Image 1 (spheres, rainbow, N blue to C red):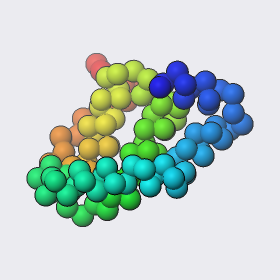
Image 2: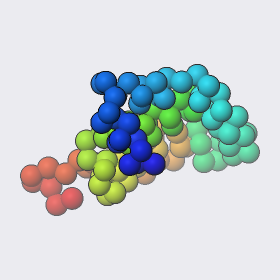
Image 3: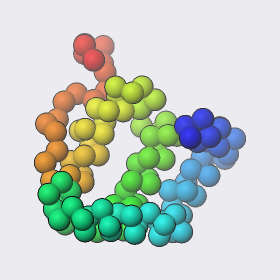
Image 4: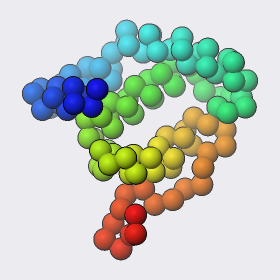
Length: 111
């Protein structure tokens, strides 16, 4: 999937295809029922209770495409991607997110 996303990105004007996917109403409508079922069966144990399925679907689609297209720096590296998800994605959706930690390695980081 990553190779396809990068190929599309490289051969489209200003990542037009990625933009179209991230803003595709039909794609959100396909993902939304899955999010609705996931939230309904969870009962607020794992996921935040105040999330709307449509918002969660759009968030997952947009975040995934951004990561696949390399919009978020360093997420092509597995450890940076994991840290990004732990620090920024999970707090947006789960009831008890992991504690923050440095995400993007710097010159003075050991990461």
